Length: 463
Image 1: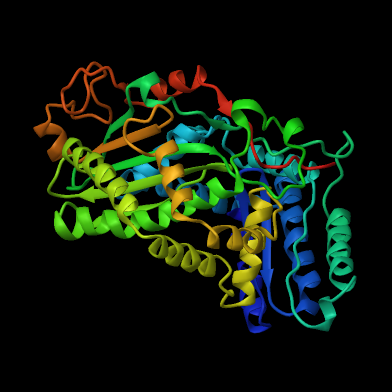
Image 2: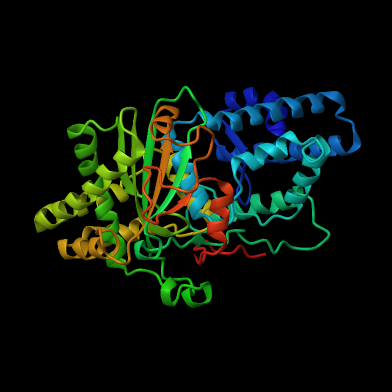
């Protein structure tokens, strides 16, 4: 943020020249993204990286004076405010955030980030500059160059990308410890317990914003490891035994189920039952582990009742699938396949698709083209088999996670504590059916500590 503030003096000139840029951190490093004329990309990149270096040096030598300190405090306050504002996010967004907290094996919570930002002893200008220098000197470079025309054909494109990478390497500081051996840092995805194992897993929270009148329920059904591109060593990566990848057909059938789920749950809960204005169903993935996610946010119905209606819908949706004709299934499968390979509206959109593969460290750049025909060939038998294996109520392999987020009004009506957590000795609806209930970060981490996990599908970076 400080660097971006320092780059503001270049922003106008870059815009006039038809260029654009973004500098941001990611979970595994930092990203510099630029758009515009190919001939100007190296110049703009050189300017950005050099300015980053200069800012760090000015902080180390004290040459920046009070201006850098002032900008640092401004950016810290803006970031603190952004994190505080997450408490005012819509309940369904908070549920999605906590779903990610459950599924990722090792992940920090926004409250923990806030505590670091508030601590002057660890979050100060010099400490941040030192951390940035370490990060920049311990990097594995990955360059994605997207363009059109003859200038990028054959070996020209890779050669230009390599030239940019070489120049970046010269600009970045060298680590005294030699080449980086950094990996993704990802350690896998938590395996959810099956229903027989946990009698249901529930995370229950009260929305901290007292002005919020909405409650939300999110359900996620975990399946298994999605199909890869066939080039990786699955045995070496740990995808064997219970962790082996699902079949191509099963993976494609799960995507078709997700496509069928959205209009069905929206029609039932939103249109017919008027349960909530926000209702959705979609394919939810966490580091390559496939699943189905359902969402409903309501201002007139508390979470236990939303949950009951969702459970009823799961039964009727299974009946709907069974009653569908082979032609209906095939039509939906082919429509989904067509959307997968739909041409991007712009070169930037196409670039972002490829960049997503790099940021997720899958590097499966032909994934869409490969998967489209697999999805198009899905049959009714494939869909029914996948439904009965992973999602059908009562099957022993079903792995559901329920997230209940209460408005203050609904929490008080249910007799729950009016703090940011709920009572630990009962379910949200007051039942004592043995459901595994998580209410705060401590109970969540305790649950995750004893759970097995799927290995990460992200590939390690090579030094």
